[in-house]
Length: 281
Image (cartoon, rainbow, N blue to C red; front, side, top):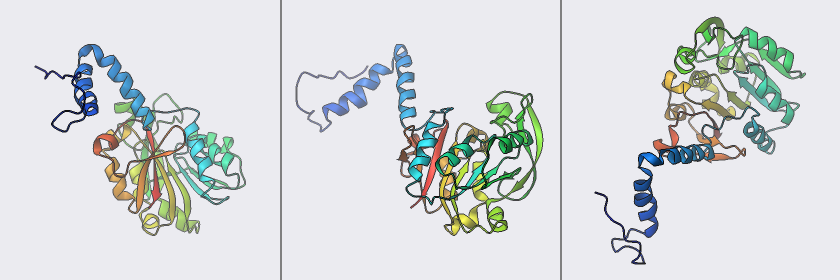
């Protein structure tokens, strides 16, 4: 039987527990643990998660646009930007709106999406590549919806389409390069912004950038983290190991950042849609 709590005696309890602790940690959880309260719990949980940058997917990409606007005070006017998993140019358009002189490298392995990308994005400094980026160069297979040409769910992680999205998958042969090799081939000393959205394959992309990351030749890193990582079996802690010398933050709807580098696993390992931003310490 739950212990009765007397709120009429005034002053803090004699054992040093404050009245606030009694209400927030004991009384409210007891009341909200009833089956009738679960709709309220789900509502509060959803609000709290979105406030912490989780499960707040916005088709207008307002959070990413606002973050890019903030970066104008720290990045050069002509930053080198790697847009990995560019799809049909949604993020590329945001970058060029805020940084018209950006040297923008967009990587998209799906040939159907790549054709739309090259038609949608126009800039003298735009360098599209019909490639995937990964841990090592070579040939591989991409998986996409069987009845869709170039969806934004396409992934090199087997199971994303059939397990997460519960749809039939088609296989598309693709070529893989690495961030390190592309930088070497183009004579790039630095990438100012590395943005990765590859549906669960993000850790492999970072593995292929080990030399540049170790040499501090990559500035801001932004990558998507979501339920695809359940299939790829990658945790936020794995990304922390791939990004030594960086602090991890979650991108909030207003374009600001929430530092999660020292957060507990309860508040960090959340497999809902989110953009994580890694900044050099």
